[in-house]
Length: 232
Image (spheres, rainbow, N blue to C red):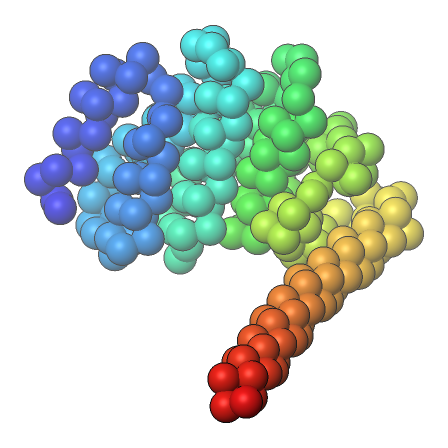
């Protein structure tokens, strides 16, 4: 494993600095080999470079490739804790703001960009929120503006947990006070939608099981009727 991972950089170059199928491969390395990343600082820098390059590539489909870079940033922030990313945190947030300054035609991409910031807040709130007030507001207001686009289990979890960390962080009272009710309302709404989706899934499973049971009963009754006719 230790000898193979650096070779991914060559594959990444071969794919014109886009991720594609490499996203799953790098994800597996991070998940199963995260302890090795603590021993190899160059691995951390390599994977961050891959994420940054993909985030800004102009290779088509551009926004899909950019979103994959954003997702890789999220995976790194969720996997590598313990201060390992502290030296890189300011530059990660800078990259998010820089990409958000460029047009995003797809809301999906905007959500994934804001997810990077929210994951950074969960990883180390003091560093992720150590920003000028204008940048803090730019990110928080942007999230509130597109909150309805945070669809699906994963995105809503990132949204709720990230905003809760912002609300509980003590060093940004001005921003928290200004947007407190909106932030709290967004967290509650995300959790309610999450709960509703889980209930709908459970109801769908229950209905399938009931239907399967009814079909079994009907089949047994038909078999019994056929048996009775044969006896006659």
